[in-house]
Each structure stands twice: as C-alpha cells, then as structure tokens.
Image 1 (cartoon, helix red, strand yellow):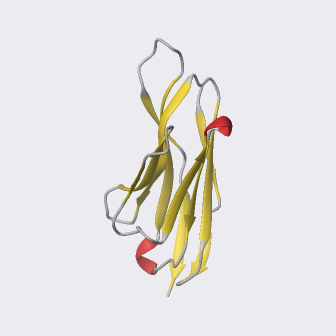
Image 2 (cartoon, one colour):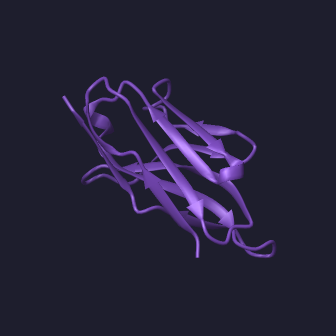
Length: 121
C-alpha cells in the first residue's frame, strides 16, 4: 500500500517562510507527477504546484514567485519552499502523487493526510 507522509506545516507570521516535505512509501513502480494542493475553510481544494518526473513545473498564479517546488526522484520526495507567506495562504496543504504500483497497472492518484499551514497577520 502506498502512503504519502507530509511534514513541515505550522504557524507563521505574515512575511515568514515554511517548508513542506512529502515522501511516498510502499510499493511504487513509478511516479509521474508529484505536487501540493491546498484547501481553505469553505473553499474547494486548489492546485498550488506540481512537478513531473522530468522536472516540468506548474505553479498557481497566486503563489508564483513566492513558492518553489522541487523533487528528488530517487527518494520519492517532493518539497515546497514557501516564502513571503500571507494570511490568504492559510489552508490545509495536501501532497499528491500520480503513480503506478506495477508496470502493467494504471496510474492512480494518492493523497497525503494533509498538514495545516496558518499565517497570522
């Protein structure tokens, strides 16, 4: 069974920084894209940033220039560095991986349990 384990959330003041990490464990054949999504209260889950195994990055306009995503393919980890945080960034952040567990299997999406990021003004 594949699990995504997130770390690094917390409380920070506006203008501060946080770094979130996520590691995928279990039976994994290959991982296509990994990334981060977030969900604020009474809002839908939204994309923050994703990165493919080849290094192609997609970043939401709202965080571009402040958040940087990176990935270590050998360690099945994805990290996002979040700088110049503001209260609008407050949300539960979820790690996501699109992966195969076998060479013949279909790609499937796996989600982490979520980590809270709170930015105070």
